[in-house]
Amino acid sequence: MAAYSLDLRQRIVDAVERKDRSKREIAKLFGVHESFIYKLLRQKRQHHHIAPLPHAGGATAKLTEDHLAKLAKLVALTPDATLDELRQQMKKKARLQISASTICRGLQGLGLSRKKSRNAPPKLTPKRERRSANNKNN
Image 1: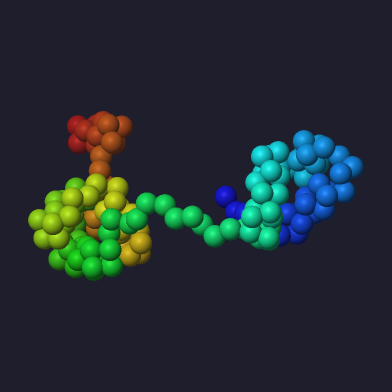
Image 2: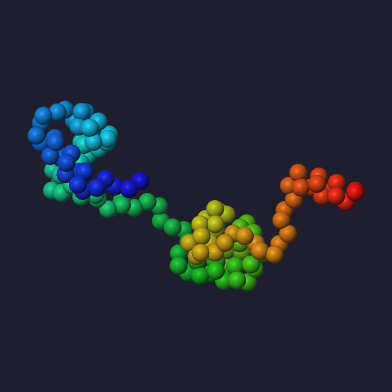
């Protein structure tokens, strides 16, 4: 979710400072939650500005630049490998135990497709299998 604009923040603070409406009414008027107004006023008191604060962080990525380089090499060597096969290869070669979804995010970060091969035949679904069997019988 994107941060509220500085213009909106300033209009909210101005409305609160005029004291012609309650904070609940101001929140409804500007389409924000009442708790946002309290957080905004606290930020103004503590930091002396109302600009959006930088992102506070989050979990660190398990795949470093070196790991991504190894993953790219593995994909180049075995382009038809599944996510699980790549995960197992990373476990052996990079001594890194990660999930298949982490491999998928790493591939997406490298701009690589999860698709095994463009020339591979499509997998048959139960409906396609019945059609294929019916066509063989005719």
